[in-house]
Image (cartoon, rainbow, N blue to C red; front, side):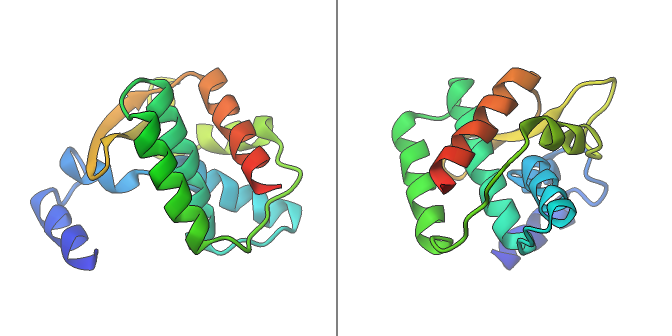
Length: 144
């Protein structure tokens, strides 16, 4: 994965295009990480990003970019690695507040890198707050 990341970064040093695909899982993941620190539920960075990847995969599926079978495969793999972590009492509105502060947002929109297949990603995808809240609620149900 380091070789892939290095190749992408060398192609797009200023994150103006393809490099944005590396942000997959990070918009919600960083928000979950900030929320966990604020609420005393200490998650490691990788755990928070994994939860972000689950949410953003769900959003990808809701936007008809990712098949439900691919979503199940991604969800199953991530949960097999992070099976012992539990996030409780998630406040979706607070997560949205953290998401709004993300560096990828501009002009008051929330922008995501979303999957359009396993191993394939689109960037600068504007997502409505309602879909994000739905994804966060789904993630919370999986984690309990």
